[in-house]
Image 1 (cartoon, rainbow, N blue to C red):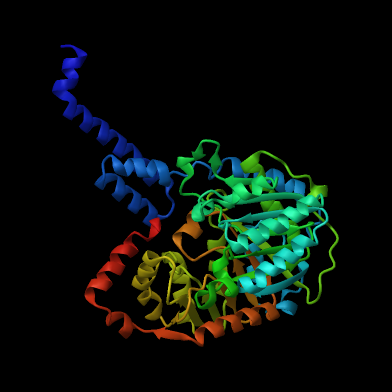
Image 2: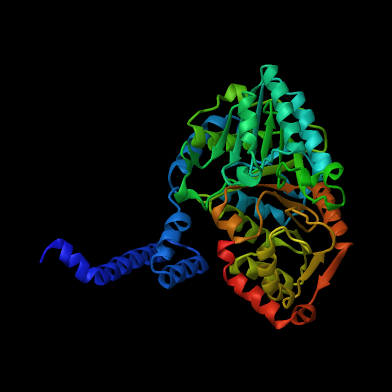
Length: 483
């Protein structure tokens, strides 16, 4: 029997064997490499239910090839280069926050490779109306270097203002590097990176190559937001660069968000994170002397703070572990504002345990969400926290993208991370823990402002939803690891 005849006669059997082999290989890989049981079960289910499509989707979006690969190795190198300052830890945490946070400081010492440092000034910026002008003022005063990293950088009216400011800085001889996530860059057409390159500003896309998107990494994104000017002034938080956050442009449809301007030793931590991401993307190392400063003169008050980075490499559980520690030491209140509140079972257990201990837990989510499917999935999960004593507030008005956590009026966690599977497992994120009563008060006041125009979600209001909507929400919730 010839090979041609064999293929014609037995092709269904060969296809079955091939499909079964590929599916079994993918399912075994998922079961052996996924540490989160929900992710493992979900991927195995997709693979088995879709014999060919499932393994293909897993190959594209499910396999993490860099968890212990290049980024982790370059991080070690970058930290050695950018950690010249003495590792002097902050002392007397109770002076700035509260005694119970001394144990949380020890958690951070193990989770983050950055020391908790005194001498930082943290200023909260509300919305694009405050954030973008502050960023442009800093860029216009730059003398040596500007590093900018973001997830979304739209080529719109506000984005072009930032580009123009960078162009002016380049004309003054300032060294500039801009890093944009490859997925985030596609939110506007044409992408802003073309405008940057036309001005001669060095810019790169995270996770791409000259032929386009690296498909094996399509599910991994850099969600970090960093701006460092002259190694002395930094900006970080949750805000992308988009005109929808500016009242003069968006009017009564302006979206809300919160960002932070920082000065002090924490700026060195910001630039070290940027430097390792830039080197991973472009293979260009950034010299310490150009991009860093060891001299700061921040305004008072000065508080302890440090960066906590997380991502699908060796730091995959950094934010997860920090929040577990924070919820465990809470004594009076936990206040959370999140646009995408989809914590996993472990974090849900920590939040619920705090509420059962008598801690007042307030969770603020948008009433109008920019991601409808995520909103449905959130709604399906809210009963799990409400029945344990947490208060959930659904804000009226426009979408608010702020990611804010503060505990006992003394400790805060802010940055780019959402409380959802993507931020906790897939994205490269950057957050800051702050030991400061003043910062906690400012954030708490911000959350109170949202609660002031919010509706309390109850078990009765959830049960009153039509069955078809509750079923829809539950089905979408089952797919939350992919959202």
